[in-house]
Image 1 (spheres, one colour):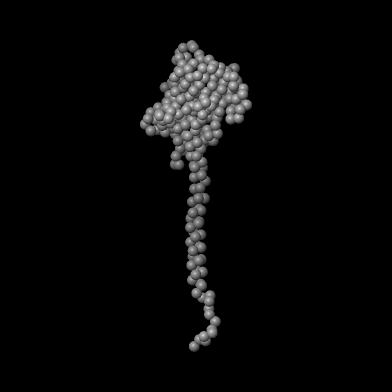
Image 2 (cartoon, one colour):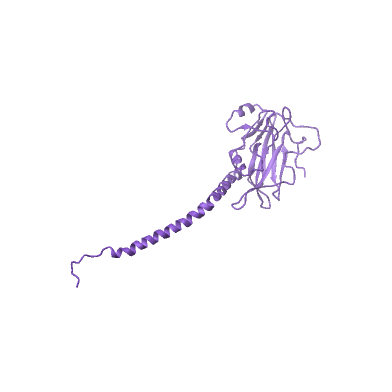
Length: 260
């Protein structure tokens, strides 16, 4: 018969509790490893894709004030804008030295996103950038730039305008450049000998049409007179029509622009 004051074995009942804690720790470790491995394996590509989509979104939604001058050639304000923050000298499409210094704006949104588009050159002043949607629902990032082409002393082709169409990226598909059926390089020569003036050429930031998702407008000036360029994404989403609708360049050698 056990004595009433015999010592108690207090540690004996604790063994199952310690085993349960050990099992829980092992299970927790397995769960953490299961979570960490996919993040380690898939995390960097997913992070890069997320960054791409973020930078693309900044371009798709880009806008600038309608009165912002984005290109200023041989005008009374050209020299001052060359000293203004945000403007830089626009380089010609070929050659390394511009015949005249022209200030223009190439926003960081476009510069950052162009890193993901190695086949597309963005060197001209940005006249318009935004998502446009065709009547058939095709979505495109439309980028319109002043594509300068030099001769010995000046830039020729007053409406040397380059258009890039980008098929927006998705999480599973990279962005794609659309090769247009025509030459989206500005305005087409219609055979006449009249040329528009070349001094005082300004372009203002293009604006979307809130009532038409395929449409946009770009305002320009030549020698103090103002006019408008009409832009429209076609129904297939594979080309953009540019047209001078009014102002000093209307009715000159520079007309609609596309050679099929």
